[in-house]
Length: 221
Image (cartoon, rainbow, N blue to C red):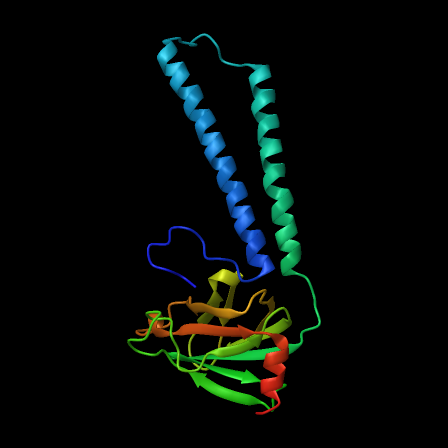
């Protein structure tokens, strides 16, 4: 759940986002270390009052910085390849959720649950501000879920930052992705594509719960 004055990333709600957070910290650490190293070299050179006007090439230096760049790129490429592989994984989903965007609300449909369909609107003056809805999405935790999204009017985007999900809702087209929520609780997101006057009033709220509780309640529909 986002909080005010939060300067960091949200707590991850999926293993995919957990790896993205670690990758972010990994890259940030390398940027800071390289910035400190470059700052040190420039500062020591300026303070030394030495000039190298007669030096136009240095094979040792060229080999050094080329090797360092290769090593640096390898440190970036290896974890990013793991994350890219995770996005292409195929799983057997337990449940399908269809999210249809409208100006400016969402319509949700559960094909496996007697084709249950309902609309989700933002609740005014209800905490959390601009993120509370009248009908949240109910999903089981620790189960693979297929999300299918489309639009009834303009292009929207169904996005949950704490899960690392952002998928466009395009009229006349079905986009799909897989997700797996690793904890129970409330997870929030918003439409992340400029879609008109009330774009900022299209919140998304997921209420994840224990799978046994979810499927027990679904039988009473």
